[in-house]
Length: 391
Image (cartoon, rainbow, N blue to C red; front, side, top):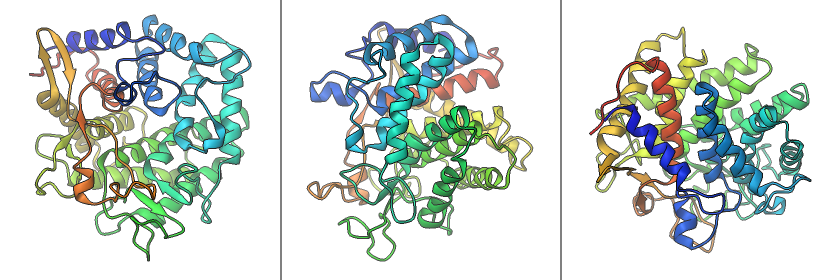
């Protein structure tokens, strides 16, 4: 299978999707509801915009503009968005409005950016200074949430405020390093409860029990994107965050499977029922390859190792989970969702059994979006010349 087949897969995803019902939002499809404004669709549109950025193929920009224009009104209000939910996930889709505003000059996109930034400014915080994940998760910091909120925050303050709030962003990352990193192996726990009251947390540390692959991936992308949007590249804070990013890549390389992929619970490959997971593996393929392309991983002692690991990860995903059936491509091995709590949902307790109980699906944007992002970097690092062989 060469790159043309994946290109056709991406085209099919756009062709078969409408702004109301995108084929990649499996969660909404299972719930029988139309798409609104959520981080899942935001991931997919971001992937298409990165394809546009590197290829200049207008079809990607045209679809992204169509998709966002549909749900954003002239005054900047967004269908399906509610500030009062204090859901940091809701900020993620706003990242796409920076390039769309720059490229289309539609004022509605800038107005929508301003509305989302109002949430960022008012978002409740833990006593340490980090954004709550959601109103229904008070005092909680999830690795996922750093990706959803902080790169948007960094790009906004750099674009419209001369970077005045950059240190607030850095400090939120540094708090996570202090509170959620395991110094023994360099990996980060999925969630932290500052109040130390949640049923799932350790009452001394506030931490959950396990590492979850996709959340580690979101955290990796949070650092990568914030580094690339920061207005003070090379400053002490920037270099500290860069070191955090590099150290996480090193930690992940130590638990990378020989297939090139990573396990759903990356530090427990031997546990029965654990499996090689597509979305998180795609995110780390992307993090490694884009980290090289944007200069953050270049010139480091392990530069060659990062390149080899990123390529091996992407090719490993193709080998294991990219399949064709009667000429139709599908991407499998995607964890549909995982999280902790809330109180009324004791099933989501952060145990090994819980993380391995969530549905495994195919063609969901939480896997497809990162896969396309990784594919874009894979093609760039190969200068579009070498064929991609999957089975």
